[in-house]
Length: 330
Picture 1 (cartoon, rainbow, N blue to C red):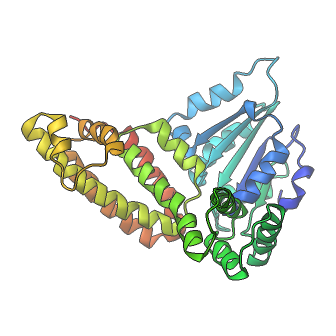
Picture 2 (cartoon, rainbow, N blue to C red):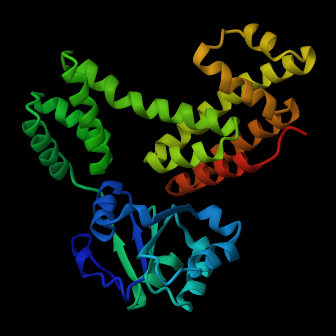
Picture 3 (cartoon, rainbow, N blue to C red):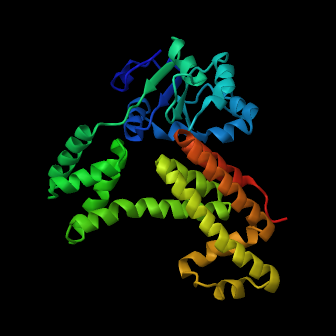
């Protein structure tokens, strides 16, 4: 059954236990989730890969529900056709008081997952198309007016163009500008340009650092909190390769001197003090031969992303999660 994004209240949660959200407008998706889910404490988030790695445990955990438990919500992020068999299995189960929401990127018409949800009357399929620039501009004007922030129309256009049709990204950028202005700093084109790029670059660097340190929980948190674009995926692979090459030099040095502090202190260029601890974790986790394999795999992944740009987010997410689980220090 297909519904429009503004028809979210038509969902009967006693009947429609399986719901598919697809499209790139994460802000509009989150607004819909806030309508559906009143109590966030009963919500569990999963990456598709986590489920596929242990399908039976996932299904058992969903079905092992106490009679006294409240309504439970399961959100599966970055769902693709790979999850289809799991969903078909869940269709045969009693999901009373449990709602499962699949959050997918763009799904083509030939997608088997999308087709299943569109054709079955008990399932709900909702596309979330990008907001138009006109809609985002109106939201921006309202936000700036309510917070008494003066910005030129050209700067508003600059912010809107950065948001890729996603209202959540717009609100995040506007809140950064609001906080910047509260510190008494002048808001101009240069400052705005720096502000709307700062968080994204920081998130990519943090994501790569934690992947190299194999901090799985932190990785999943970063992936859940950020809406990386297709173009960001290429930036992630390129940044990942650069960091991996630097780590290769450090790993070779450590293999020779067996002294982690000496390895860190002798690095060129010098390692910033805030990065020393996570860099140590990375050196302990990786042998030179494994880093060489990683660099090769990154190059292959970058090539696949360029060939399949519409599937780039799934490709880079799968790669990063798989690397966080792989044992490399042997």
